[in-house]
Image (cartoon, rainbow, N blue to C red; front, side):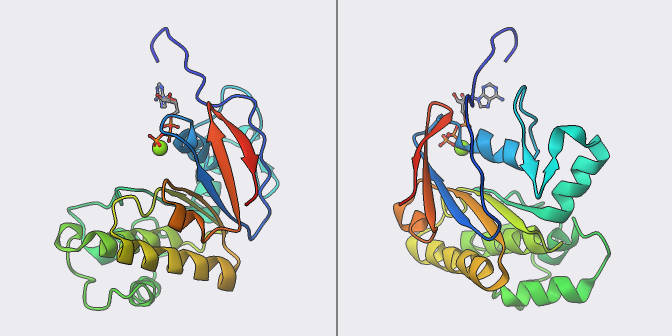
Length: 206
Ligand SMILES: Nc1ncnc2c1ncn2[C@@H]1O[C@H](COP(=O)(O)OP(=O)(O)OP(=O)(O)O)[C@@H](O)[C@H]1O
Ligand SMILES: [Mg+2]
């Protein structure tokens, strides 16, 4: 940050098993989002090693990093981050490697969004927008989902339906999930809860 350096993460060490569902909790500013961005190679740590499916991120070219992100990782954000000028279907198809409209349509239908394909994101409820964002995150069949407070903007009913979708993905399809949340009810869906404080994990396990 200008001349000032901020240690958002320090001394952090975490190995996540394939197929695991982990919740990350902790106070505001403890480094949860930074951890998720580093884990998904959206940010590169100034020191330390980040390995995804056996591949060390720092040793890859920028192009290889982008490919790894595209092929292996799906991101879900608190504020959905959908493109407002695109339709629901176009949003989902945006990151697609090989254009396949049927696949996108099937995925949207599976998310309970039949009949909403040609709407714009702002014509949908928060819960519906988050389901579009999940469909977009899944479009390239990632092995890992990184979600930053996916239920933060939703009421209990919508939060529950999003958590159910994530749990099914984990249980039925073996997708590994790391989810930052402030919501204990959402964290309960995970198999393991890691607590962060001052840029590191303080303990883990339920
Ligand atoms: N781009 C940045 N430049 C400078 N400092 C930053 C930057 N991003 C994060 N930080 C700092 O790093 C620390 C961790 O931030 P981070 O966003 O990871 O916290 P968080 O746990 O996700 O918080 P919240 O629960 O509020 O989302 C904070 O002290 C924050 O101010
Ligand atoms: Mg955050």
